[in-house]
Image 1 (cartoon, rainbow, N blue to C red):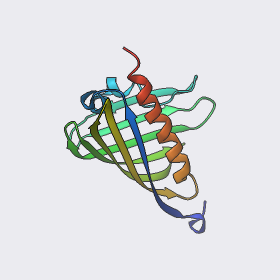
Image 2 (spheres, rainbow, N blue to C red):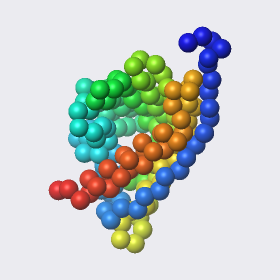
Image 3 (tube, rainbow, N blue to C red):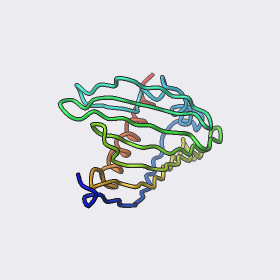
Image 4 (cartoon, rainbow, N blue to C red):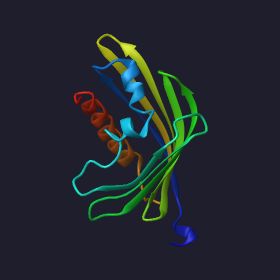
Length: 156
C-alpha cells in the first residue's frame, strides 16, 4: 500500500435492544472476562480466541486476540474512559486484521430500566481506515454481538 492508497471514512451508528433481564444483570455482562465470554467474541465453529484480558475500571484495558476459521487473525484493544456503575460505559478501541489497523472507534453503552427489563443503547463513532472496514460491517457485527448478549440471558 502506498501513501496515495490511504483513506479514512468517519461514520457512526446507534443500536438499541430491549432485554427481559434486570439492568444489573445486563450491565454485569460487560464487567468481567467470564461474563463477557458468554456473548462477546467469535461465534462461528472453528473461530479461536487465543487471548482475552479485561480490566474493567476507568483507565483499564481490554484485549482480545483470535483467529477467524480459515480467515484472518484479529486484535481488539480497548481502554475504558467512563464507567457509571449500572448505567454507562464509554471506551475507545482499535481493531487490527492480520496486523493491519482497520479502524479506531469510540463507543458508549447506556443501560436503563424499562417495564419488563432493560433498554440498552450502544452508540459508536468510527474512523474506518484505508477501505479495510466499513460502518455497515461494524454495525452488523455489533448487532450480532448484542443478539448474542440477549441470548446469553436465556442460559443459566
